[in-house]
Image (cartoon, rainbow, N blue to C red):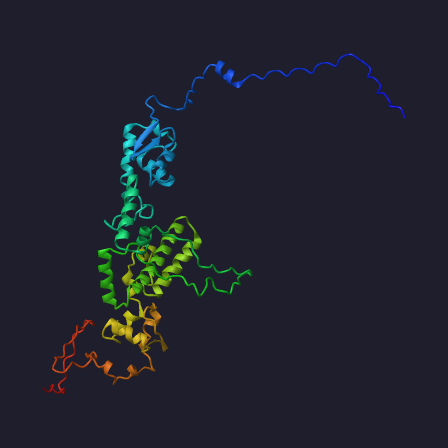
Length: 405
């Protein structure tokens, strides 16, 4: 088969050439040609005086003068928004005024107020209440915050406390809690069920905010000795009870002033309750009398104190021993808790328990004027202890025989 020849292509008009791409202008050349821009002028502030200050020096801190007083003062360490607003009000300066518009006298007045916040603020508002060194309520501002913090950490390191050791070793002082939280019950609580958990009971007393106060410790030791308390917790428990009564009275005072009728009913209930407990008279009392109560009013209504005052024991400590050992009863019911508050109706029912051996008049403890003491050692003299009952010892009767040598 003969080879086939390819057919020649027909010659036509020449194809148009592709359009050439426009050359991109180089950015570098354009930038070189353009002239440098002038720096932008700062925005004009409205309401600015001629002697406006953009930076105000106060409490060793540089403050922004363009901001309002209530916001600019928060740049000082130890000053928050609430403290800043309070300082502005105490200094007689508007909170919304720009700090740079204030005169030198106004800024000096603000700085003087910052240095005297411990006396101007209530104790609950300062950031260092009851300073351990001076015992005063202080509010630290500026560089004092860091200095006092460093001093406290050095003190903890020096006394080798738990937190001080962790600071010294570089460990976390407040690590995360690893104790498993108790799972909440899915079902709803019934009204008859009590609140809280019996395994995690709430504390019934509050420890003092500062552990080392000489005057407070001396006063507490005197009360412990006077009322025969076992430890400081019993005293703190009485103070906590008194604190709740006083707090309730303050709340009711504020509500009564607004004309709340329910508050008037609750006020009468509180006064009647305190009257039944013997803390206040039954009639003619007000909430001011509740606020005037002290901790000795609570301690004087304890079962231990009333047992001693009724003559069932010769000392407060002996009264506590009788109660704990089950020798004292109230209206025929044995009570073994010395700190029970006794009401007026129950006070006359305090006596020896019928099942106790001390209920017998022939028991040695019941002998008038005699306190059972351990026998003296051989060759030693029988020294009489102090009579804490306040009564003179009974004189020997005419029929009593003299002691034999």
